[in-house]
Length: 159
Length: 159
Image 1 (cartoon, one colour):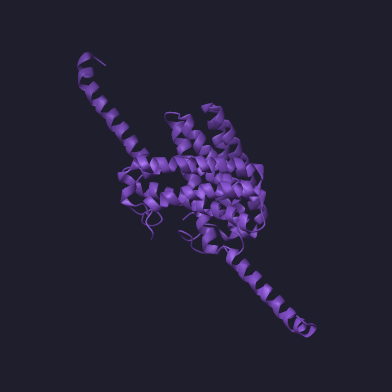
Image 2: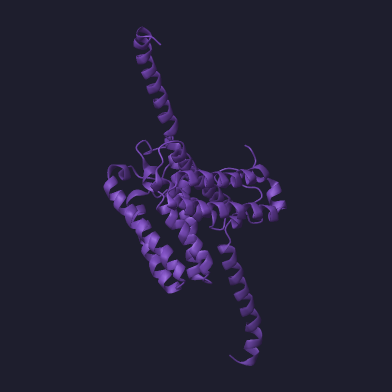
């Protein structure tokens, strides 16, 4: 390629690279509806697992089941749920219309604090569950569910 | 309570206890639609986490993100997904109509084998991910996705 050709092609090539990069980013960025669907799925899995622990505490205690459920809550909690509330997901339909209140996106600092509390207690519950002491699990489960309620009170609509 | 009263009330009391126990069991047994919803949510979380690992392997490798995603897949895989395919869930709507083929419920032994393979490779991926060797993660991720495909080929409808 001679100098003249370089002068012509170099800017064109730069544009092509830029366009390709933009396209790649656009393809990688998940749509808001997808993020909302994944967060609704994540909380569904968490709620289901929480119900299993509650059933064990109120009925016949099943250590194996509690361990599995607690491990699931801990892993999903710590999977990076905050990223599922990215800008653009304030409204929209995943499996259903989002239940997140507009307030959540206006106070991300408080949301992050509540999320960190949830993650901490979820991780601790997995540790306690492995120990197999039902009374200790009950205490820690209470701590966990209070972090759920705290966030729901502030940032989840009732419907 | 005298003997005569005991004779009258004892069977009645037994019936009441039986009825209460039946009611409690009926309340505890989740509805098929709930089980279908939870399994659809579980696989949504797994697919999302799998996509995160794929993105890391194909782009800039992010160890922390891969560990979180792999831990989530391992925990959900080992949470007891088989129970979500209980009798009565052959058809029905969770978030949407079930994608499970009728064949799944007719060959639960094969389904359990495929599920066990998935669980094994998911657990192994979490271990490998913690090591941080991207090449090893790629190999193990391939093993995992082949267990996904094996089960989808046999038991998941295309729509």
